[in-house]
Image (cartoon, rainbow, N blue to C red):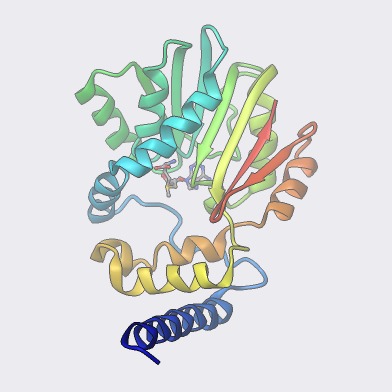
Amino acid sequence: MGKRGAMGSTCFWLTAGAVGALYWLGARERPALRQPSAVPAIDRPEIIETWQHMSAQPHIRYIQQKLVRRAVTGLVGARVLDVGSGLGQLTIELARQPEVCEAVGIDLSADLVEAARHQAETVGANARFLEMDAADLSPLADASFTVVISTLSLHHWAEPQKALAEIRRVLAPGGRALIMDLRRDIAAPLFGLAALVTRYALPEPIRRVGEPLASLKAAYTPAEVAVLAMKAGWENPTVTTGPIWLLLEMG
Ligand SMILES: C[S@@+](CC[C@H](N)C(=O)[O-])C[C@H]1O[C@@H](n2cnc3c(N)ncnc32)[C@H](O)[C@@H]1O
């Protein structure tokens, strides 16, 4: 075998070994049943700061903008609700769209609502933030929103079916609901990679709370999400998937 052949063969075996190791780790870590996360929110100050930094990365912003366009394209004077709005970046992005006349973010955490209000004020965005549980949106009127959207929050909700029923209630006839989250049933090597990233690669405050592995273990599968939506009274829900995410939609 020539020098190049030997190098190719070494590369092949190294890659195969790495994929095999990731597969083994992922298969060991990935739970068959979901494991609800012990960390319900991202409201510790050091996590807020790190999350703020991470979610300003260009690839996260790109995904966010694609979702925002999907949510509002073709609408006029839309009223939009962001459930589990966290630091409010998505709500603020929605408020900036010409199709949107009102953007409201709700979150369980008073600290995050405060941080989101501060952020909206800083950038001069016309977005409102309220402290509320997704499972009890009673301060919001029936059929009062054209769009309800949520990102990376569903797997934290203690009462997901109740929350999806509330989303259904506040959505106007013909409105759009888009719930995006991680999915637990990702390929074993990807789960293995997430385990490694959680242990060794991410900023310390995020690693300390075991993320993103904890969220992946708490996430639903596409089938589980479809069942939840149907039990919550959603009409013809659809679930589309990517390598690590799922998108539950109605309308
Ligand atoms: C990982 S963060 C995602 C924040 C934001 N949507 C984003 O994509 O950056 C999850 C958010 O869901 C919120 N949350 C958890 N349980 C909730 C509930 N029952 N009702 C409303 N918000 C909730 C948390 O406080 C947190 O802000």
